[in-house]
Length: 151
Image 1 (cartoon, one colour):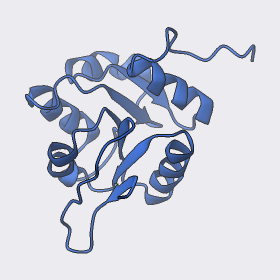
Image 2 (cartoon, one colour; image 1 turned 30 degrees about the horizontal axis):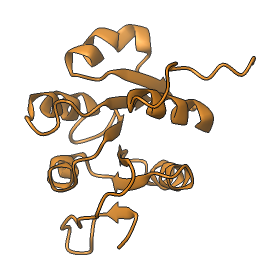
Image 3 (cartoon, helix red, strand yellow; image 1 turned 120 degrees about the horizontal axis):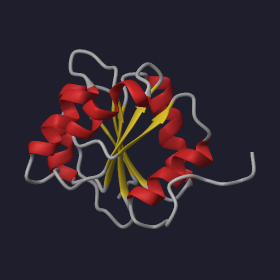
Image 4 (cartoon, one colour; image 1 turned 180 degrees about the vertical axis):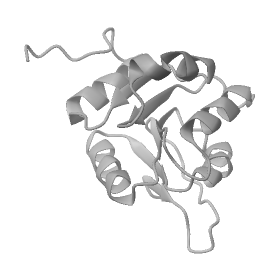
């Protein structure tokens, strides 16, 4: 049994057995994807890493993530398109989505994110503690969405 799901050699998704919260990370930046995967594993999460936005549903439907971390600026399928499709999916419509972006500002695209079913966002670059705090809040394990450390 493994705690990580990555696309296999044959481009077929592998299935893992969930014992902890399963976080799906979707980002076409492979270096960031690996960093986030390591961070979340250290944080005690099971991780499903997907670098190709066209493979999100294939993997999500087999593994039903508890939360999706989603980069918004990807090609050929944008994070907005993925979130919109998830909102319309009976299996994924209640799965919290946290958008990750360094390009779209929260103010400019807040309405579009909301219409696509994105509950919250985090601007890149972000502090690991802030990301974990947002994840825990979205999963219902925290009462506050933001870490207040006095800085």
